[in-house]
Length: 489
Image (cartoon, rainbow, N blue to C red):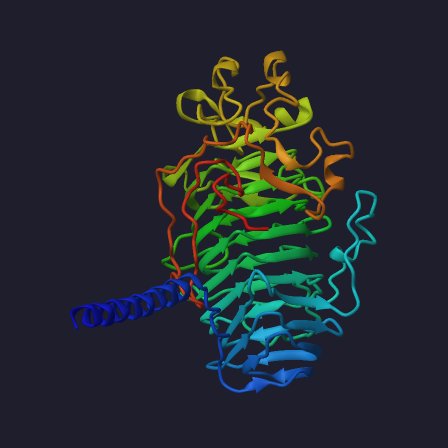
């Protein structure tokens, strides 16, 4: 009897043990399995096919929409676009946004805004005059002052920039002839662009006339044929622009100015951990910049930017200056903080513009020192550090070339994983990222040289589908971090 009872007990324990094992196994499997997030749904679905006129609701995932006329998102309405959707323009039409637009792609299913049947032509020999990237084949995303949210994630904007042709554009702040890929202007609204691509422009790729912003981990290519910035922030723009790759921009990658939008909000921009390659060469106006720029009352922080073969290096306008009749005024230099910029150039000419040279001998500043159009001073945290090589009496904007400094041409190669340095073609010829890899090799002199002792402004809502997912300052200079963070393209 005792033996039988003991056997029954052993059997029960064995059965309970198997059940417990299955429960634990199921629990572990369930916790280890990543469940895909459901698509964001707003209102009724917009049926695929031809679209124009007033739209609201949701453009469906993995569907194609042919834009056959201007699209309007009315005030109070919202248009949401799900992953994998394609918005294909059949002419030079625009999105006029008075309400909200959320384009929420994913890394595996990006959203595409493009022109019908158009392919990219990426080769050094492609002439700017015939490259479709600079032709403005469709208009752009134009936001009125009533637009509270323009949020673009994992979204490609290709071949935009057709000039406005209507005599009276249907939003405030726009004029006939303006041609931007994206235009935003609500001082208290939110503009979020992250993990996206902007390919081609006929002027500024993005003009932020005012507003709160987060521009993170994007790739900008071929912005402007003869002028235009990739990201041009005007009066009242406040936010962070970081971990972006800017290549082949006509003028600057990011630029900040407090001009153009009078009000209580001062332009305050953090530009950090960006990679800027071959910038400034297509601009026909002298002295306009070619990498990272602050002017006209703007303030902010600029650290950890990797500037390679650009016409001009990091630029802060520090005194009244003009170029071709366009007056500039001093940035808010009392509230500018910067350093840890990495500069590389193939040529001595480029090295002599790491700190832009624009002397003005007709004016003198404190202590009789000549003033100039520049204010950014070389920092000991910059690479290369030329502080001890500067000539006696150097002031920002003054020429500083010398045999020792000129010998830095071709030195401190940042060691991209795949990009030709020194460049075989002229720097202005390679204006695209296709075929190259701008991650850093393990031996790069940019690794571990970044400043992480500051914080993003984080002016927009953070987290979730509708908020920003900002990356804090990185230990490596540039947009690509060796720990896998930063730009994901």
